[in-house]
Image (cartoon, rainbow over all chains, first blue to last red; front, side, top):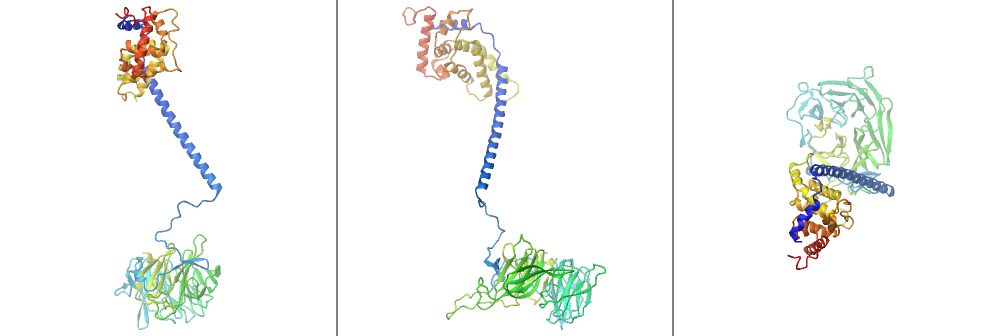
Length: 419
Length: 153
């Protein structure tokens, strides 16, 4: 048998087979396999995800139950945050930039501009009323004062009213502008003058006391406390509350600048009291603080749940002073969620060592009375005056920024300062 | 992959299925097993249709390599009681590898190298299986050993 005989023999052996038709069956079989594969892939993916989720859950639970682990990412701090310098009476404190460095601080832009001086030109308030007062100055001529009002839109106007000096001189105090920015009050001998900046209406309220020195508005912007050394009154100056007596005597405080609303900060070393004013009950104690305050300067200024006032401390181990006593601004929060804070206004250290052995005298000191709280820019930024400057202290970051350089002696700020 | 059969695939299968079914039958010795293996090979080809450079080699590998597996060793021509064809009897006496080599060489007319590639064995093994299978077929069909000078004519 030859090799070429093999093929016919094999064909003969296989010829009984029927003709197949496998194309459709093969194609549909492939489709079924593909569908099955896709289904399997989907199910496998779901199973893997489920297993991963369960594993993560178990890992998380076991970690939680084992111990308290600090977070991998530290809580974020606001931009520009400065760490506090330490603690005084359990409160974080920051140290303000030294005297003389104000010009080089970052600026907080306000309608006051770079420097605040008496405007050369103003228009009458009656011709151009203001919606919101940013600042109030007094122009003096022959012992008579004229109010100059700066609006939130940076316009200066003057009111056509003549104000007399009071026992301390200028009748402008830090609490002059009402919380809504529409009214401004000036203590006067035997009375108080209130100007409505939105209508240019001036009202004069007569009071029995000769010596009245400070004013402080209640949060409703309708009532104002007028304080003197021997007498104090609550005057209904706004257009509300029909039937209520216009003038109500209140208990005078020994410190005429202490009687403020809604909050009042005063007291001695180790027992500083935060009190809240109410129409019916007067001042009621809110909390007691262990601050080392030996005396207070200026009025308490409040916005929202925070009250701020400056005090002079005798001696603090946390603050080195050689020629003066440290002054501190206390920003006291009435809410548990937001902490109270302190800002120390200290001395400017000597730039060069002393020629003789001994402690170096500072280059500059801030004398008591130079500095006090002026008002608020926003609920976390109190504004305060240091010699010749208005500065802003950001409670959230601890930063101190310059607001304006003062070329006037006294200024009162209103809510329009935030623009 | 389209839902209905690709016309080019159908034409490809139609042109080859009859010949490869017979080849597979001669290798496996069972018509059902041969058709099952061929359908399996075409199904796999359908999954990769358009992606294979040499579809013939792809199908032939899938068609014949299982015959060499120890786990699926075929039992050839055992149900053909009514038709005791001498070629089938002779093929039944060969090993699966010998049968596959014999069919691919003399029925599908591949070269020894192509057979080695399809079955996944060496060329020497194919050559050896071919010699042995041809000799056994000759003996089975009563033609004596091919190595006799007389028979080699």
